[in-house]
Amino acid sequence: MNCDTQSLKVALVHDWLTGMRGGEKVLELLCKRFPEAPLWTLLYVPGTVSDLIADRAIMTSPMQHLPRVQSKYRYYLPLYPLMAELTKVQGADVVVSSSHAVAKAMVKGGHNRPAIHICYIHTPMRYVWDRFDDYFGPEKVGKLASRLMFRPVARLLQMYDRRTVGRVDKFIANSHFVAERVKRLYNRDADILPPPVDVERFSNSIRSPEDWYLMVTALAPYKRVDDAIRACATVGRKLKIVGSGPEQYRLKKLAQLLDCDVEFLGFISDDELVHYYSRARALLFPGVEDFGIVPVEAIAAGCPVVALKRGGILDSMTDRTAVLYTEETVNGLVQAVLECELRKFEEADLRRRASEFGPDRFLSQFERILMNALQTSQKRPELAATAAAA
Image 1: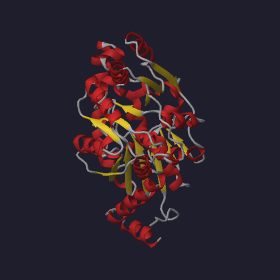
Image 2: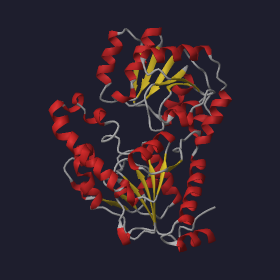
Image 3: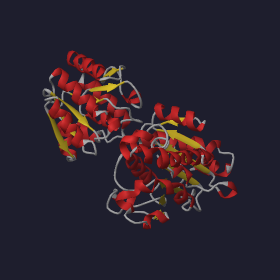
Image 4: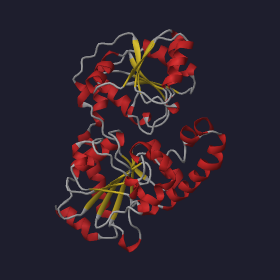
């Protein structure tokens, strides 16, 4: 089933283009699906995204020309709604947005709106809803700034976020966890479509586990890396951590204080990452994520997972691929690590489960959702007829 993109004018929207993270991997596949579609975004930093994304018409907002915006774009948070209102898709029949901030709002309303707007939502704006303190809490910006400056801005952004929900015709959430937040915050239902994971990159690795545990993560508070360090110190296990971030100094001091054998690896190449997944006894995943691509990468390499039983992890892991613990404490993680060491995981089960999250499956399921949305659209029935005849 394939919609005729020659007959439909399709446009893509993404919040900003500053690197290749999970959201940009989704956008990359959408660019593959719609090779002629122009792309609208608040900000584009050349050289930070793949050629598949960069090789198209990219329309940016006035934010593109603000001072030091390429590295300090998060500091312009109060201006996001204004930039979104000044940067709206024009001349498209179908808009597909990839949104975790204001991309869903960058679409005209009223009689000039496109026939249909499908939003693939990675999460409602996390830094003004559930994770305000992780970004702008007292420990991050100071008590006065948090309460008197950032909290009022967050309230205004919450109002804007809700008021622009009507510009979306169909929400697609990357997990049941995010779909629940869409329902709670926006009072809208969402289809579920997990993001694509490049599982083939890990599927041919040779599994040879050693006696240490692995984390692959940004070193940020909500990732709960300190829980992993404390747990490994408690049971006398070695931990290797891939990634960097603002918590690195504090976490290194914690490891020294606890006399825990922790190796901080920083950023590594893709080939090196395959190596570490293949050698780790298990991946530790104590944080709560909207979906969690890293655990899927791990099981694609045959590496089992120890994870907190909350968030998007419930969409990807099963009892055959992970030890999932419910006690959100260091002791809960300790008990899960000990249970993992008693369990025997079948490598074939892990890799088979990972194969369900590949790019081809993402595209085929997205195609089905797109077709259904076009066929049920009441604004421009002729679009559905065009698509069905293709």
